[in-house]
Amino acid sequence: MSDFQVELSGVTAGYDGAPVVRGIDLQVAAGEVVALLGPNGAGKTTILRVISGLVRPMSGSVQVLGLDIRRMLPHRIARRGVAHVSEGRSVFFGLTVAEHFRLGARGQRLERGAAEEYFPALRELRDRRAGLLSGGEQQMLALAFAMARRPKVLLVDELSLGLAPAIVERLLPILRRYASATGASVLMVEQHVELALEIADRAIAFNHGDLVMQGSASELRDDRSLLIASYLGRPEGELAETPDETNSV
Image 1 (cartoon, helix red, strand yellow):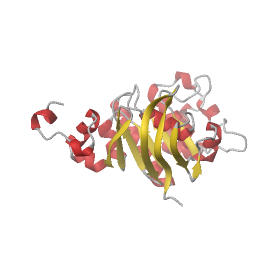
Image 2 (cartoon, rainbow, N blue to C red):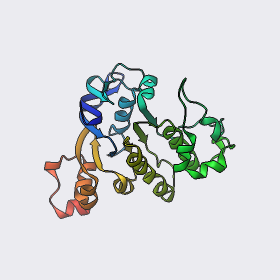
Image 3 (cartoon, rainbow, N blue to C red):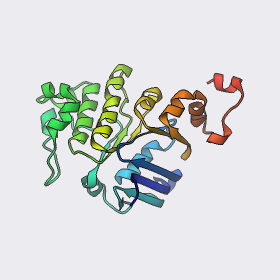
Image 4 (tube, rainbow, N blue to C red):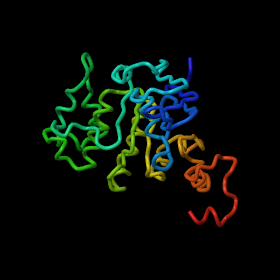
């Protein structure tokens, strides 16, 4: 049995027959936080959608929690232990905070108390409708709602979207805490690169649908040229060596 809770091999996927990502190999172990980096349109969100079943791959293998999920419906994948916090606000604006935690699938019990341990500010907001919360509060609710299901795989797409950096600095470390405390695999797409690398174990960089670089988060933090090369779309063996090029970015 594989040591990885998420394992993609040779995955090509996209929309309406047009590939967005091509030949992707990717693994995430239990308790590991992996950051997906790269410019807009690089294919990062598509990877998350493949793992949660929202996009069916054109080719390749997708193993999640020991199962081949390529033909499974998204709600069945979710019941197996996958939670996907999509880009934007994954909340129901017309429901109160407390009502969100009554939305478990049949036979599923949401652990509101456990989720509120990560987000104690939500306790005072239980009776407030999600549409009246601030952007940061809505993202707290989205994460808490996902964590209340105690997922074994947590997918988070652009947590920082529309939020002030100070709020992001408070929210991102919670992903690290959750992975360490529960053994869940966390895969996140994040444009606040420096903050993402502070909490991630590894980073994988995409450009134009291709995986162009991967390595430990500490490597990318310590060697800025590696990070720059990933955003320029160069593979590891083709990094810029001229000082003028790296200093101009």
